[in-house]
Each structure stands twice: as structure tokens, then as C-alpha cells.
Length: 375
Image (cartoon, rainbow, N blue to C red):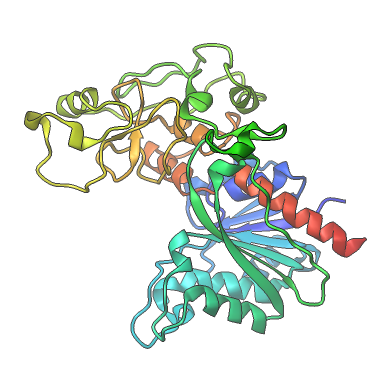
């Protein structure tokens, strides 16, 4: 019998999609962004999408209104946004700017699942609250008071078959009375310079080319809905397994001067490589970053549709930023997942998501520990 879960602050559903890949039954996703929920709803056929602001509604009441019994939930998952700092004298959990993390802890307390998983930014591991505690210590103490043993770790998605260097922090907790022998997932992919990559089971990190080289070229402002070729890699075959039509392969338009700047930046370079006449007068130091075919992508953010946003979002060949679909590929969303909303919303959905393949690895580790409880 499959384990049951709900996804809080679900966004486009990357976290829950990974849990589905691992055999879990996702009963519901909760978010207050309408376009994000539409993507979740279309990609999770059997789940209920709930448009609700959890800061104003208790989660137990919200899911009971949808005829879901909280008592049947084995795992609660979610990635609540956290501003990550508090005013002097405040605990992080009491700072109104971090209210969604507080709502997540309240949800765990109300539902009382056997296990929970919470995702957040890596900066949380080193941040202090207003009374000199590490935020992670504060959260661990809160979960302990609620009757949960918890642990946290930073994982890099590139080590789990995602063609992108993306570090995120995860908390996993289980009821103290359970014999929950949890182990963090072991990497499946390694740097090409690592001795492990030469072992029988070792695989090298996937690259930008491994992920998107089969997608057709685009001019700025163009959209295409047919693949350029047959899949060229095993990753591309996996991504296209259930998709005959190319969706969301569209790119924003760029001004002539932006296109000229992109032309003058080599793969792996950024705006510092521009000739003097194209240099920018201001802006972040790491903008106009261009990807390389033979390396993993840098972290995809919700602003990856903007050439002048901090990061590395320029296509390695075409004179444009990545399309929505290319970013989704680099996040390990299969092509069958259609992103909904306007282009800006779709970029944000992809950039904010937990990569499904990383979520799958975590879900499988949780499942192994749960089987040990039930045996």
C-alpha cells in the first residue's frame, strides 16, 4: 500500500512529483499562487489542489474541508519561504517575516504525521535569530518539543542526476516512538574528476548538453513546439518518455543591445568579458552569465528569464536566455509537465521548485526507513 502525503507551499509541484516517482500517493497540494496551483493540478491528476493562504487557515481544517482525513497521512512535505533573519531580541519563529516557516511547524503539530520533510535555502544553516541561536537549532528544538527527532543536511541536486548545481537544506523528522532508522540518500552521480565516477556503479554529473541539446534553436521572442531531433542522451529519453509535443519552449524578446552583449560573451563567461563599448554602467557583478554545454548548469532561479539577473542563464549557443522548457529540463521536470500562467510566472515556478529527481532520492530514503518501522 502506497504511503500518503500532502505538499504544503507546493508551487508547481516539484517536491511532490519526486515523491510520486518514488511511489507515494499525493493527496493534495496547498498554495496561494493560482498559476502555480494550475500547474500542480494538471501534473498531479489524482491530487486535490487547494488555493489557500496557510497563514490565515489551520492546515488541519483546510484538508478536512476537502474530505481528507489527516490521520491517514504518513508524510507531510513542503518548502515554506523563509526570509532568514530576525530583528534583535526575536526568535526566528516569532518574526512575522518568517511566518510561513511557523505555519509549517504548526501544520506538522496539527496533522501529526509519522514523518515530515521541510526544504529551505542553505543560508538557513548559518543564520542566527535575534537571541544568538542558530535558526536550525531553534527549529530542531521546536520539533523536539512536538515529539519529533529531526536532522538536517545540505544536499546538491547535481549529485542525484539533476544537470544543475543546486544546494538546498532539508529537514527530516520522525515521531520519537518510531524506530525510524533514516539515512540520507547516497549520491548517484559524481564529478568527472572523482575516482568514484570510474567505479562500476558511478555516473558522472550530467551537463547542460546532456539535458537540452535536442531542443530546437530559438531566436529571442520565438516559440517552437516540435523537437529538433531524436533524443541524444539517456536523460533526454527519460525527459521525453511521455511527451510527443514540445511545450513551453519559448523565450522572451531582447533589445538589440542585449543581443549584441550576449553575442560577445563566451560560454562560461559573463558581462566582464564584454568590450568597453558594451560594458554596463551598473548592476550585479555576476550578471549576463553564459552556460557551457559540457558542464552542469549553475543554480536556476525564478529570474532565469532575465539576462541581467544575477546568475548564469544565457544559452550556450543561441543569443538569448534559456527558454521556460530548457530551465525545466535543467530542474529535472519531465517534458510532459506543462507550466501554466504567463511567461514570468512560468519562469518563477520552475526556478522556485525542488528538482523532482532530488525529491525522489529523498522520498526513497524516507520510504526505506518507514519500511523498517513497519517490518
